[in-house]
Length: 595
Image 1 (cartoon, helix red, strand yellow):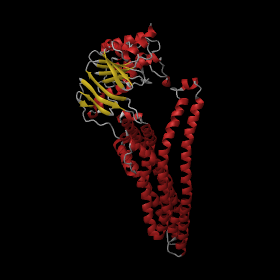
Image 2 (cartoon, rainbow, N blue to C red; image 1 turned 180 degrees about the vertical axis):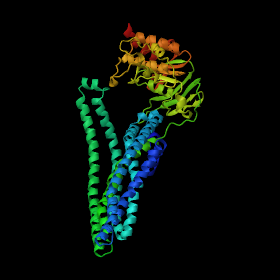
Image 3 (cartoon, helix red, strand yellow; image 1 turned 90 degrees about the vertical axis):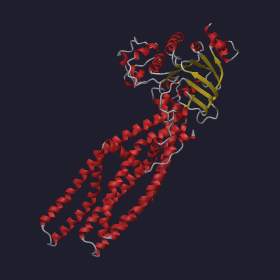
Image 4 (tube, rainbow, N blue to C red; image 1 turned 30 degrees about the vertical axis):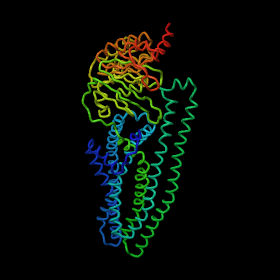
């Protein structure tokens, strides 16, 4: 299992940027080009503004000394005054274009995340380490956008600004450039420290966040509200919610405190550089080494220069530092190993064989299945019986291909399941699981969701086979009746939801179907009718029935008896009743309740 949740090579800043920009270029190329042009113009315009101010101040000095004409000064003054308006317009336009680009790319990355979750081996959902990973991946989705936008601003806006300003300052006086570069160093150190601290915080906080989100759901969600109120367990869940939230908050506060103390010391050093630059300007002016225009231009631009530096390190690089850890979790999830299997052809499923198969769930030392040997021929109906925890449901998950054996081998038509691509393995397989889903969609959609490519109007037929009451007064809009009160629909009884789940399983085109205790909420008489219809439908198909009610197992060609993860007996109902085995004891134990 470790290979499913192991760490992959971390994604770097440029890899993240390339990934998101690639999506944006494919979906909104014109918006991306316009955004790049605008932020480059923004970077150059601030330096240009400083240069224009120098020319204007030199012209004003020339006007006072009688060396310059008033008309030229007025024109330069007008240009200087309009420059901030130009910068404001470009800034706001780029923000609008950025928003469109950002939302588009984020939407497609969310789609990537969902598609990846659908391709991951289903077994990893049994591993709490993976659940932490997927929680961190979804939390990191928006962080990717923050990282990439900040990275683009640094590469295309801030870099252009600081390089052009460096050239300008060097031309004014090389020592001014040196002094300003020294002022950068504390911010660089702070960025490195912040990045490491926040990446570590995300790894520590994720398990606590997942727990308090779950306990909050236990308190507030419709799924849990009835039992929570009945058992008066709100206090317990609130305590669990509070303790995990407090731990998450404590870790966040501890990290923030360390970051702030470090930044306080580094900001003091930056302030020293700012003051030193001003002193140096006055010194050069007094010595006549720079003119009034250069002095005034640099002096009035220092606030912008240091403000842009703070913006670079505190906002943009700071945002990268805060979001980089979560963003890496997003990409780490995208690069988790997937189920391998090169064969994508159609499986006839003439023979399915399990040879010395054992299976152990992640994090468990005890096998759920052990030394299973079973051969199933196409068209057979098999019932799987046994007490709770005997391995019945786990066996069906192996038979469907959802899980692969831990040891031994499972063959379909002589081909190992590990060599078969998941889409080929799941094709023409249907199931009704014990823990079926109640989808908050229309009645028809609840059935069609099992085979969206089928395009078959046989929804009513499947519902009739499942004994779903189509004439119910609840179904005010027939098959288009919305189910689930969350979206203004109606609710069904447990038995009705179960019949709908059975209809969903029957509706899907299949050569093999598994019914994993699908009739627990249905009375025995109606259950017998459903199984009778099921036997007729499955006459030429491979079918497995998992049931506690041994009377229903009699429709099977063979009955598999399981105990403690092993097959302890197998045969027809008559054969098993003639033996002094577990099946006979279980059958008589149930039969006495019907006498």
